[in-house]
Image 1: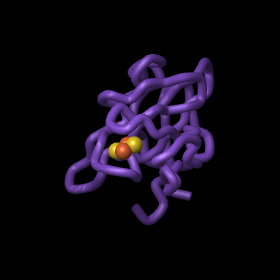
Image 2: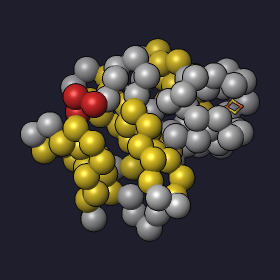
Image 3: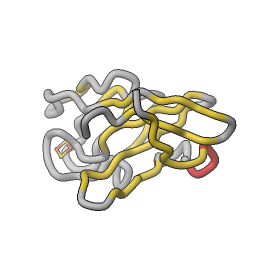
Length: 106
Ligand code: FES
């Protein structure tokens, strides 16, 4: 695994998540529920909506603000239509207050 440092835990709002922009690559989203941190793609698989900008969090569920579909941030599985395509989820490692993710071949 190749770990890439993304942010510190304190930067992630439990209300909105944190959008992580990357040069020339699709943005990521970091989510925090209590002590747990998850990293997913930020763009909804149904359309071109940012999940961190306009999305609503309910526990581990991310509701997209555009058409109100939803995903489970732990698995990426769509939990509410029209989100049938899973959201990509990345392995996360925490070191002190730093968040690292394995972005694979992304
Ligand atoms: S763009 Fe997210 S549910 Fe349609």
